Image (cartoon, rainbow, N blue to C red):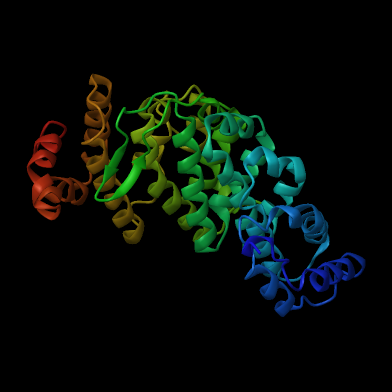
Length: 357
């Protein structure tokens, strides 16, 4: 008998337990039932279990008030063989939003695992781009969640989604020191980029969650610790986004939002906000994070295709950033001395073309 055709033992008991939880969501989860079934799951034996178990898990999650980690873990395993479109035929946008808004990190990670599936193809990323409320709640939870693992997952998912959706891309992909920045694949449709960077509400949400100002301590605003986390997450993802589509992150149509959150006129985009206006430079830890951001940005931009726009954008950015910041300038100029020897010469030349000692 094919091993994949052997029934999964314990499913009947788990199914009954799920029925009981539907009737009374205050019941404690029986860990052994979940573990026994989950350990047996393979891509071959999962499909018949999806219609049997997943709708019940989804309904339980809507009303379950305790830690749903076991429910979410099983749901992620059951969803593994499905693509984004198939998952969204089983779960509503409202269910995804509810999971994103949950105080339980396991529910956030489940929702992000669903969105991550849209990064498998440009057409599915384009479908996700139509779900404005889902994107908005994803951005908010990515930046504001206190848990490190939620922030890291969100950064990875956002980068992968914008990678597959990018409508201009290098032919050979991009990688630096073993880190994949852009995968070699056909161009995407750019709909998700437009949803995030050309939608006033979502672009304004990015600025409001990461900028210091009166709104920060307003009702529903981020605490000082959460603001630091949000800024750190934007710092980490921005070099990858700038490598994928520098124009999208270097310019914005919403100069009035710049004025509101950053008190700067003009159409400078999210890259300039991140690099020049986001943090309090008196905060030593955040200033070190800013230096690390610039070092990563320049190391990656060195290997992206040449363009006059790129060079002019980076020259102005560095001129503005280092004008009053000698520590940042010194760190950038010494970066080639701290990189791997085979890349040091090229990096020194690149930095030399952007900034004067």
